[in-house]
Length: 247
Ligand code: NDP
Image 1 (cartoon, rainbow, N blue to C red):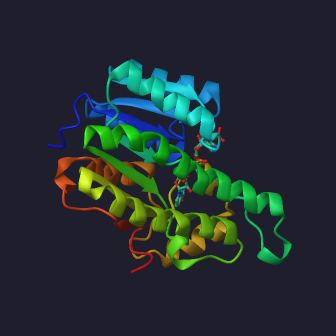
Image 2: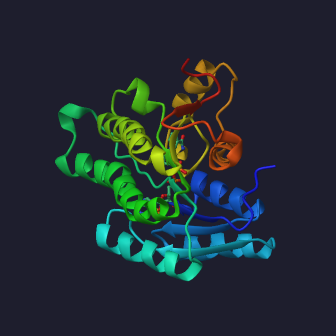
């Protein structure tokens, strides 16, 4: 149905959490999933799990904030496979704190990983997608980038920036048949949200009309749809996946 057989898919932060679920889901659809992540052990474990299940994945230990290394890596991937079809900009971090007390380094780090990392990978892949006149970019934003959140000014700004970047690149690339969309997850059960106290999780879950936190697979399912031809007339959009938390 999704026709993703033999597609070359790069997923940043693809070794863990939502990124791993996305990597796994693409591989199950017959794609070759390429993980870019920081921790070699996590990459090896993720690749092995996909290999053992009979699907295809490989991984590179790379920091999305390193513009030169990212350009080199995309060049290597293109040389090896002769094409790159899909990029999922998923790598992201939080460093929460009230703005009054937020350290400059915590502001910089979150903006650099989340927003500049998305710019780095988008720019690196764009020369190949533009040449191919075909491709899909999916950016993992957050509902926090739409609604804001006390204690997450850096994270909200980075995700709001990703939504604006999505619209601008969708406009720049549309004439070459390249679609760019964002996914804005709500509260999804991963290492990132495991840091939250039971009290906070409980209060958010009560506010979610579907009365539960999301699962990484929920996000991965939307990602597959947005990467496939089933969504061929959708570009520049941000789709919330949050159990109805914001409407
Ligand atoms: P996790 O922390 O579970 O996974 C993030 C992955 O990104 C990790 O493998 C991490 O590596 C990797 N990563 C971090 N920094 C870099 C970097 N500089 N270069 C390459 N890889 C990096 O997070 P989630 O799966 O929860 O989140 C995935 C995305 O979804 C993020 O963009 C997040 O903002 C977004 N999101 C998540 C929500 C949630 O509720 N979980 C809600 C809304 C959005 P390592 O662990 O080794 O540092």
